[in-house]
Length: 622
Image (cartoon, rainbow, N blue to C red; front, side, top):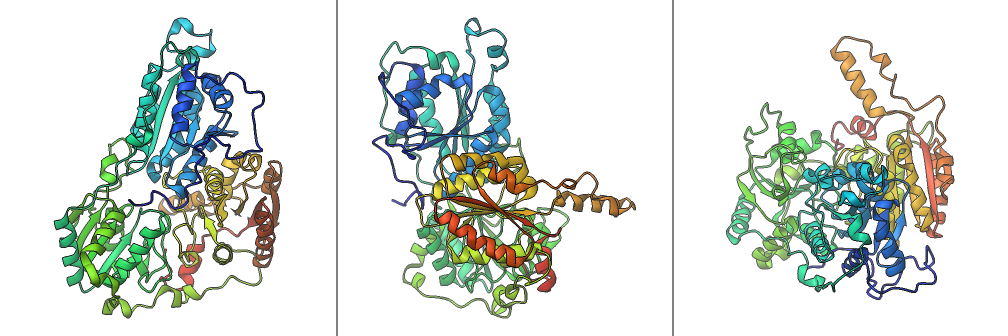
């Protein structure tokens, strides 16, 4: 059986607290199961959900009591947050590392409304998150005047049903057990995704009148992802083996080290060129000879050259395959055929529902493969037999292309003097992360492909696939939570707008003493939107010099460091490469000592990817 995740925290079957010195209840007396919420708490414990991130709320006061006074605030242990968005974002960040869920509790309809954006983020990122909500009392006769009425919804799950895999509102204690088991099963069935269970306040607080059965959760675990049919495996290998220029597009794949090694072996055995992008987590060693172009956020000239050369393309759950091909080949229609034979392996169609367009454009493919990408890789290696142990040469045309690490862009160094530019920041942080086993939980918008030097599946966790702003701090905290027992350093680079919207997530990290480092790329602007305003002005023959109005976060400039210090972080402000290098070294000591630090990096407006592109003649992976 394949391992489920690379960094799953140690289990606590005995009900031990994950943080034994933090928020420990005293004088626990009546710990018998006697209330509806005790049933929900017991079901959660049996799933071994170690943590539950929450903002307190009266709608689930029964469940809150059960977690504290029935479970002893252990397995799960509460992670108190200052905003519901942060609670869900933390769970999302945790799942990005472990590929396993943690729990979240949201207060009634109002808490759910706050948590909607990161739930959508989790949906778009295909991460397993189990969200618990509450409503009611459903029985109107039991409601307190005013407050219970405005906190009750007839169909609360309807607010998020289009972008969760499952939602339920059980009406009895026994049904609660089944709802939680089903939610966990579906959240962890590929493609992963968020689920929602809403608990009636009256049901939580009603005494039990009969015994509740708790079946073994192992009998309700998620099924393994489906393999590809044997004939599809053979057909794909025939295409790739006959190709003069096979190309692999590595997209949404697992964090497991064994899967990582198999992906490398398959590319080597078949002599396939590999590309990755910055939307998804690290999928292949970026400096490997087969990874010819730097990882891109949007396909640039280097990636386009490879795709134009390829006669067989195999997509391993590439995000937006059709859109990438249309962009590269300049087609007027997304479905316009390309000259290459296309193999597309993905399970993503299982969760396409039409409410959101997160499924992207419909790709035209020659060989559709409804299977798990890493399972498909393993199948192809098995089918190759002894040939899988050999290394095939790259295509002749690929050998003529300068590998990105040897191009001018790949040899870039941060400037030694002058103001700190976005490229200086990216190259400096990348070198630091590489030298210190840093896990980049995310990077700032416009990150240079030349700063993506990854050789482990946990080197980079991918960026925000839901397009939100304000989730970066929560993702950073969630990743730090998942990494706290490992030998890796939790590190993230986020924009100043993202930081300001989500800054109060930092308090949770300090409360539970998570070691972590955050670098804020602070250009004092919603700079991405300055670019949009410039484009509109030029299209309309209007002055582009006004693009900054309504965009800049300045006069006064916000003191980002003091906001972090107020929540238990150390902080520094830097404005040059030399200062940033020194701050990172000092921050390392803080983190290695169990502390938290934030670096306010005052960067010039612009994007690192644009600077790298200019230096490398368009071959820098943008």
